[in-house]
Length: 148
Image (cartoon, rainbow, N blue to C red):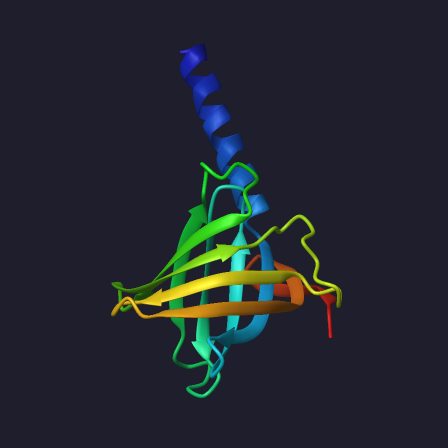
């Protein structure tokens, strides 16, 4: 019985730790290719990332869902695969380089670069700069830093 309680306590602590790590929120803006401006919001822990993005031409009411994880084979946790879904159906994938621990571009913004592949396997370059970060607590967003 004590062993079972220890395992349960360890599981709860692990869930709380991952949840606390996942409350970090990063807001980005940039482009897919040269002609598709987007806005993206990502939450991340060391083992997963999730969020949403939208094309600025279509507005924030048409958000696309993202869910993914770091490439564990890469080692440093800077390469991420984020799958995009629309109404639960696969719509594309982002293959990104993102170092949340401080990969700052010369202008001081946290930077994401990589490639986006849509469902037709067309590929577009991705360059996103963080303009704000913060965290969620009790379903309320709190801004920590602004980079503009």
